[in-house]
Length: 142
Image (cartoon, rainbow, N blue to C red; front, side, top):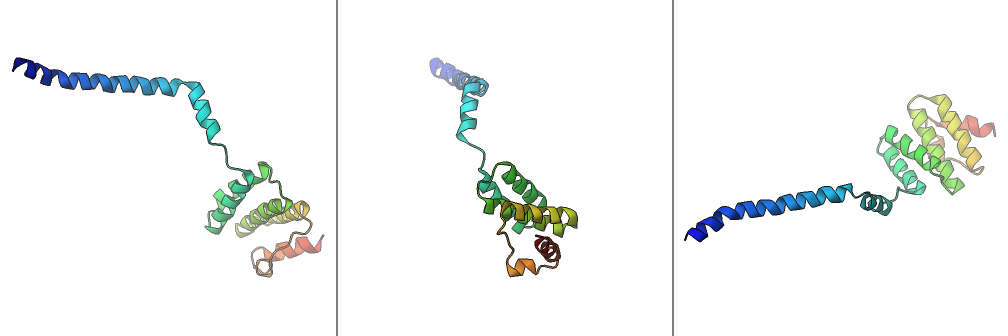
């Protein structure tokens, strides 16, 4: 019976040792810089094209500040397609126009035309009261 009581008293202590041992392992693992570097390399940054899609979705959700950052990041990330570049500039122009920054809106429409000389808005987009007049003015000057 004494042995049984002694075992019951020692059991929590022994299980606590295992917890400490696991804690030491996790600290050791977190300090292993090679493992950390490998984890970082396994999760690459999103491509420029995916940042463009994210930016467009953010714009459509009305998150203009986030959309602006994503679109600029997509452009800085090297969008391969000139059509994609023009799209990014188009949405930046929309953002600038709806936030009353007409000069920046005009510049982004110019950038869109420079990226893709065939750039154009749909009739519905071109008729928008916020950016339509700026777009038409830039398009006429080309």
